[in-house]
Image (spheres, rainbow, N blue to C red):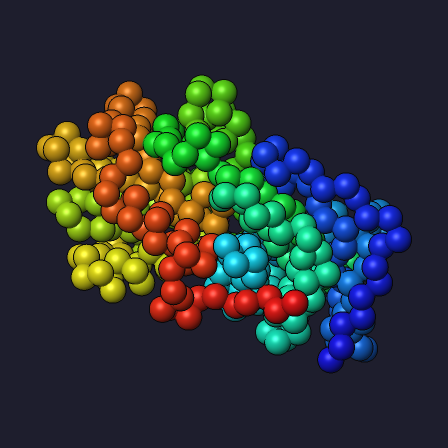
Length: 355
Ligand SMILES: *Cc1c(COP(=O)(O)O)cnc(C)c1O
């Protein structure tokens, strides 16, 4: 299937690459694709970037039937552009769709849509160190209808945003507040789906933590408020007595692609790895006993984010003297080398965007 491209007659000036930040600038084009019961998914197209026309009764505005993804395209030193684990983001998108009773999108067309859009805006892929092009596919329910049910019609959109280095002054350890009141998700809910409602539930705690000077919130399980789930919008890892431990995917946790990349690399390196429940009490007690070597969070935006301090109620633990640990650094270096094409792609994680 050919994807027609309607180019904008008035391209925007490119932002200063030193001031990109995250998710502030958007490129000249976007991808659109529509669903109706009669036609299925139809009319894929790249058009000039601009506002979407939505009826005020559109179901997404009232009941939140929405799904999104986040991945990046990177410019390698030879000028070529490549996406990291794009097929895994496509599959996770369809898994989120299924949870929200939304029809799946063909994997091949989804991939072609991202390639076509990135190719159309290829001049927007920055080449300065640690910059990239963030790809945000999302989908909204468009029936004009008040009353809770699955929508019959949907709009799928992909937009692109050039983004800067996540750490302006290099990777540095974060201060994390363990949230003991609000919860993000419970088993049986939608925690494993990338859908807007999950994030709406987290904003209050995140704002409170930010106000108190913390970088992020650490989420505990929604039933016992005891087991570690995630750190903000990233997955949590601990190194205890030399063993890497991360919570298992039990339905309430987002199955991070960076999390999976870390697990695959660690196992390839022969590091001991456990996917098991970890209580916050265990973390505090192993830390007090001097057995907590490192803690870090993993996600597309920052790749690896080392945790320097954890605060839970009245207890504070400082991890690895507030320094970046050796495994955190090795994972960060290896993943970013693969992403920017500085290291061969032995894992088959790269999709080149051919021009
Ligand atoms: C996106 C996300 C992650 C990280 O997933 P990656 O695929 O590694 O970017 C982790 N937790 C939540 C809640 C997320 O939304």
